[in-house]
Length: 319
Length: 177
Image (cartoon, rainbow over all chains, first blue to last red; front, side, top):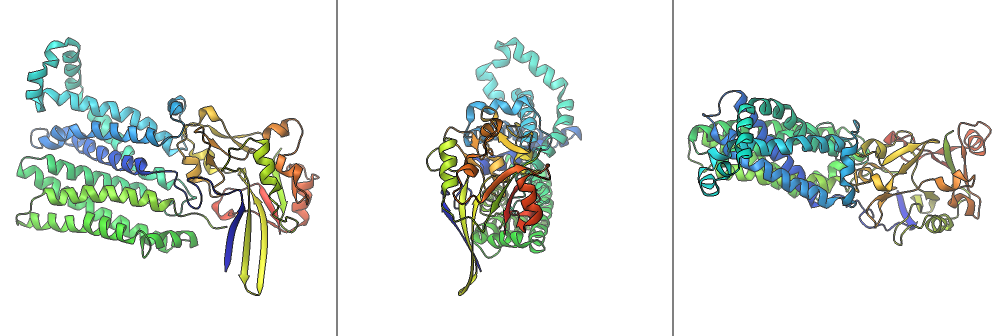
């Protein structure tokens, strides 16, 4: 038996008895970043494949989400900083070993690109708004800019494909780079968060889609991604199970601990297995309102980020 | 030059003088600390073993806080001391998450703060505040690269340990056991 007490000094806010340094804005951002990365990835991919007309929701209509999601996500990130006025310091250096530095720079590129992507389709997807505001007619430079974007859309798409993948992976690597938090410290978290981000992105496209064909295709894509995600979660748990004492204790939180209901109930069953089953039933030919599995996937993705951020901070090294 | 601290757990009585000295010397805000005392009881009654330790930042060679810092505010200087530049720190908390020793905290002014091995005192040729006040003289400070220094000799002749060596950080606060 070992019992350790702090006899003096330690009762530091947000650190003792366990870390609470990262709060809900970080979880929210990790979710929104993944969602935006997923949608933009599919938009760029289907544009490059020349399927713009066949799958308009993926390429055009869903593109309203990423700029909003990334803006809210960035505001949330800055809100959680404690030395906010120095945020610009992120952009005076690039630190190759720091995942957060990678993320800051990727966001600096992807966020404007997401706005450009939306703007290049603005007149096409919101003709009524444009009729009322007459933005492109009133301001010549906007029209020129739109023209420029339309001509160069293919280059934006080529840039977005790798960048969104980096963004999606980084939301996981951000956590897994901390070896002091055994729950996060596994190599699978990057691919897992990327898959989850792509899956929530596909679900958002399903909600925005108008044609049956598009809903079906993204239903299939989402189903495949959910299966991959479930496999990755199994691998993650196996990794903890085969790990050291600290990892075993970290696993306890998810398997048979405080976060079991949240993780297995809300993330794995309601957020992955149930929507996968519903999507499968729909694919076989039964009528299922696709918005239900899509919303479940999105909510599951959100809860997953909250569980990982909060549970991870409860885990630590023993000494 | 590689600074290190050696603490004799057999001599430490857990008086907390080092904690108070640090808070006074470094103007640590109330409710926070850069060093602290732990009391660890091992075994089961009646065979108990009590160990008292003064803990702080370990000024690791492979410092995860320096690796994770997105702005370079956390950095290592000559002598292996890990420091934080307040006006480069954005308060993101990555270093706090990455530290296996929970040695850092967010200062009420926003930036992240921690033990500096009293860098400002070392520059003047003085010992860190905690070492200089220890009433049982259980704390030693010096250069590990010099084989004749007090710390090198102690580590050569006495059994010692570091905290969480399995974290791979190569810490530089040693405990004589």
